Image 1 (cartoon, rainbow, N blue to C red):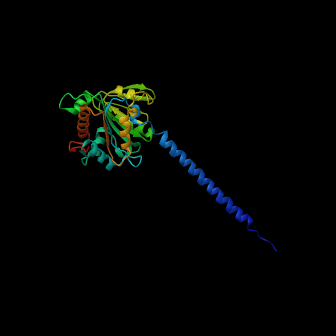
Image 2: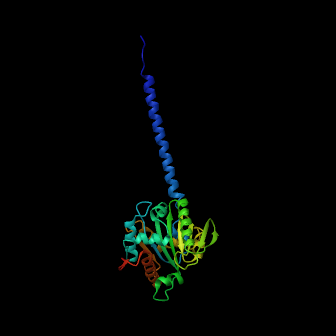
Image 3: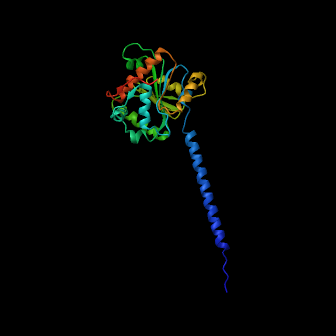
Length: 274
């Protein structure tokens, strides 16, 4: 009579269970390491850590609940900060200005941190949008959650502008290359700096950013800005910091006028919430 034993079968099930558990733990560890890399390596310093302290206006347009900006929150941010209501064709108008497709060329890399910054602004005429370019410094930060895809966007964007007849010069600064166009606008110069696509009307502003954080007299070191930064994480979609000067309110009007041109002349304007 041949006796059978269940011990090998039980041992096999035990090994299978242990092996499955080990694979699960390894996969979880790898996933956690990827999340850590994604949220630290791919995320650079905050714009305020790169900017000089003498900022007149800092508008955070899209603190979100995820890494991808959500259009309804962006619309609320524009309403709360600049008193704008986006027209139905706003996305198409922005795509036309950039010369790219938002769904395939922008959404693939853009992160949740979007900021508009104004420095050194002096209103001179009633045309505040023109004054913003000629008598001030404006910067637009678009956070990157995927630098290779952001670089692909930047190359395509520059190609579009070249095809429109514009000539660019290039200037190396630190680990970044700054591309400087000929046409005066808030989008004249652009670069991929510290995990941000940054536009500015003044190339020297981008050269300064490329010097990196950890320098004295940065915006992030101001107590008033530190208090403001705590509000960015609240429910509001848009938040605004100013230095309290009359020029700062004029800068707000100037940015609003420029955004109306970008989003479309159909953009409704109402009194911003305070």
